[in-house]
Image (cartoon, rainbow, N blue to C red; front, side, top):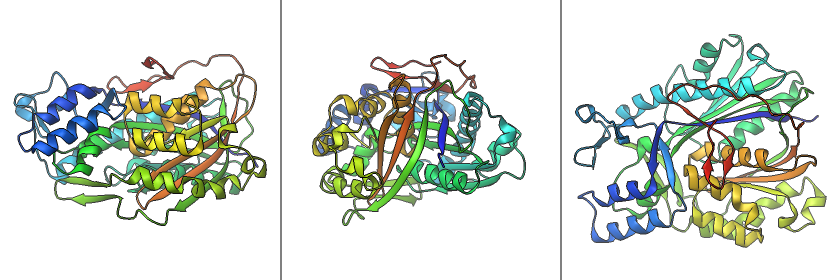
Length: 404
């Protein structure tokens, strides 16, 4: 049975952060040592990022200083709110992104309406609340109250793949199922200033974003390209448990990000790919570069460099990942969905093409997927509306996001 991802919609919050300006703010923090200053300059300047987006309006030009919780726009000092204060912002801002992006994905899905949805799967590692985002989506979109709901929390950057895999399992078990998968990450709620190298690297990379997809096994026509969800695999590398972690502290969530993570990925990526490609012997016998599309989670510029070199991929095959990193930064679990959107919008108009997708996270965990991009008809569907404070994301081009 073929299970397909039939629509994929993206969104980012309204506060745009230029990487150079954000670097200068970090450099101005009084707690930085001389070494910390050098590390900040190096991390930000070599990140491959030009802009990011944040749900924190305090970082915007019209911030109200008297109400500052995260950032004092007058002194340019980072404040140190409690985890509870950060999570309150998550509950408010993430809910808006979950609902808006889910609604856009449903509207963009030809042949289906809200009443068809049977399951909702939500994802995040940057905040918690209950009733959770799965509940909020059901209520806000008027879904059937008997819709089955699941939330995948605190898994990290690779979590979109377990969510899509679970959607595939559901649809294979029930051919009439329609699964709404929504991931929202507000990483900037936990950005902090520090002299710790791992914290500095995280501050130079992480951003906010959201993605929603509709997955079903129903045989429906589509004007847009769709993705057949073929196979999924999970592999734990033999080393790296201490290299990447995500902990809850008293003043936000704390990232452990070892500087040798790219080297671990470099050493073990081919072994992690082996069980995935074994599902299709014709692919297992080919060079990696012969697979048309690679949706690599852009955890950082050095990770993409290692993947490209180790798998001997062309620079063009890494464009979707590098463009996503450049224009949006690392949005944790939502990021690879942005890469998949890039591939959906930019592939062949007539031929089916294979997609190999990978993401990396705490553990060190490698999640991978084989997909097939199936072209739709050439007619252009109408675009979906979005809330005023949310910036919907259109196709990613060499000049940046096009919007809607």
